[in-house]
Length: 250
Image 1 (cartoon, rainbow, N blue to C red):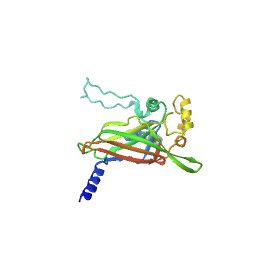
Image 2 (image 1 turned 90 degrees about the vertical axis):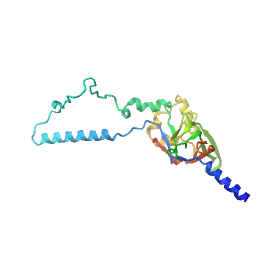
Image 3 (image 1 turned 60 degrees about the vertical axis):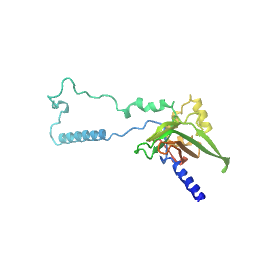
């Protein structure tokens, strides 16, 4: 009976120590600001194109061309004079050249690796993970020629590796700069000689970026204190180098 109770107690502790976390199936390597597609603007542009086509067809059939600039728009007399209608003439955020370079300027011209973890119990009250810590370890296979003799584990630094109250989504970010252990020695030397930034020619094709990476696996671990059971919980995910998606973002 004592042996059965010990086994049962060990299984209960094993279940309680597992963090209810969902890891993403891939790691994103982002090197530029991702433009968001606006469906409403696309529908408006399509409607304007259809009107122009109809006007051109009307003119080809012998009718007089319409002067769209002379068409008067109806005015609502009940419009409040104190609050006139204002038109936003600012540039779209996805089309602004300042926004396109903001991402590169933020990380000194270096791309980043992004990891995403989601709290599986985010819709339940009191299911947070307190004092959560995220760690990433890179695995490199070393050897002579095609023969692998040993594995090398390197610590990967994250921008925000601590989360005091992990309740929903958490993104871990690693900067691929001259100090990153996930790059080749030659790539780190080139970045350091280029004032800490990636050369612009490296961003011309995703294959060029992949050639600068030097690792085989990435091990992501998350640990913290469960707000449900008040015990330390943890979970981990192992990624292959083929799981890295170049040019994508969560």
